Image (cartoon, rainbow, N blue to C red; front, side, top):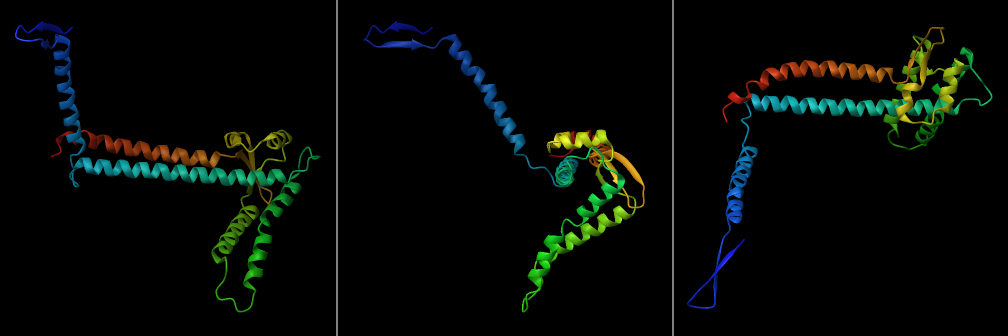
Length: 235
């Protein structure tokens, strides 16, 4: 509460400051000093050859690797989803299950999925007088992909949704393309030679995640040794 005392020499009043106001101004002073000190620490330059700089560089590199692996994982899952949707589009609604021969026939069609695109590229490059080859990089990627898949199919096996098992086929038919439901899709490696193996649609992605976790554990054990020495660095 402000206390006013009347001035006997005139009509003006003198206003005195209350204790609450004085204590409020006093409380503001440490906050301002703390903020200034914090800004000073944030603006402090780290010596490029100090342990702290090395720690920050390792931390940035680790973050970059994690982001790269995350991006690669998303890309792999997207390719798996695209592949599964293609096989789903080839299913016969009247078939309750498929034989291995049926599965091999679907794989053969899959290996020829780029035929129309390759034909268009060849047609575009057959024009007389054209300098250079159009879509050369795309053509090379397609041919490399087909060659790799053909080797898998004729060797250890090409991975497809398990349409031979009626239960797994039913689950695959009902799949709506949701990425989160990929682990529910059972996969089978079918080979022209006859060898087969089973696993789910994201097993390879999980293996990559385990490798990432192992590498992070090694980095954490190394970083912890450096963290103990950060306080001794010269500023």
